Amino acid sequence: MTWLPKFAVCLSYYDCFRLRSDAFAALFLALQIFPLAIAIAVASGVPPIYGVLCAAIAGLLASVFGDSKIRVTAPNVIFVAVASSIVAREGILALSLSTLSAGVVLVFWGAIGLGAGIQMLPRPVVVGFSTGIAVLVVSQQIPSLLGIGSQLVADPVHRAALTLIRYPEHIEPHAIILVLFTLILITAHRRAAYIPASLVAITAGALLVKFGHFPVHAIGSLFGSDSMSFRMHLAEAFRLDLLGSILGQGFAIAVLVATESYQAMGPAAKLTGERLDLNGELFVQGGVNVACAFAGGLPTSGVSSHTFDNARLGAQTPIAGILQVVFLVGTLLLMAPLFRFIPMPVISALILSSVLSMTNWREILRWMKVPSIEAAAWVATSVLTIVVDLPIAIAVGMLIAMFLYVRKRPAILTKAAPGTSHNP
Image (cartoon, rainbow, N blue to C red):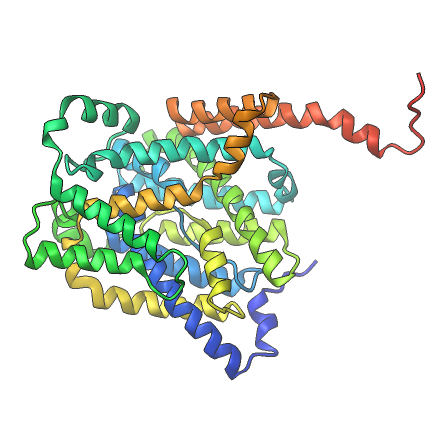
């Protein structure tokens, strides 16, 4: 089967009406993605400009070579836990190499036709990964939410607990005010697709710090003049001592990219009626992550919320994703003078809001109410993700997924087998 990107198909019937719709959707979606890309980059421990560059590159390549009209690829909050852990222990070079290896793994999976197999991962395991990662990410943000500090650590849950126990008197009221302002603003405008609440929050926060001298930690306190500087870390010398860690982290990132991208393909298929190629999606996402490894190292994937917003804003074709890059770069140039003044509490509030909207709480509540082997699998996967390194949790989670699949396989075969007798 020959691969024909949806971009090439849509060009055959493109017109001015679709251009207006795509440009309108691209503008407002770029204004939504921009602050979140900054927040994900800062929370991961890399300069904010890397987040915007990776969002632009991912959006461009996925739109040009992808198999969907509206699916959006961008930095995803689910990668904050693994990315920040890598940067805290081994530096940005290790993150870039891990993202590169994840891209290669994804391309390999697509080449051997593993797309259908990854899609069949049991839902309790997939949601278990998301739940555990949500706990890790929120724990990492607690000190910054309270205005106590913003250093990256490899064990965020332990540090969050120590922060709440040892330093309650150091909680900064100004940080709490900014966090509440950001969360209220985002919640109030969640249903208003045309108001970029996150962009308003980071702009207002930066202006308060710059001109109002608001006493909170800002991005400049972490990165200084590097907030707007770019360096290709993959050009540095390769360190053999990182090889084992890079391969393990790359595998974990690849699994998360695949599962998140497949989840984003769901609303894209429902809203457009198109039939998507699972292996082709692995190829595209693999190539995108290889490119992002050279542009800062942040992993990217299909994002369900951005995909839904893209459709709600009226996007018609992948041209919207290409135009989105133009608006991202334009916003970057306009916001550049304020980058180092963006408050860390606002960054953490954006991450917290994204995490709360990421986790499927209804599924979790259902499994908690009905004890079963699926509920046990969800609990085990969630706990492993929290207490051990993510590559180990992913590996054990895959074993749990295999167990659940094998357990259901006999029933599937019995139902499918023709002429099966049910008589004793």
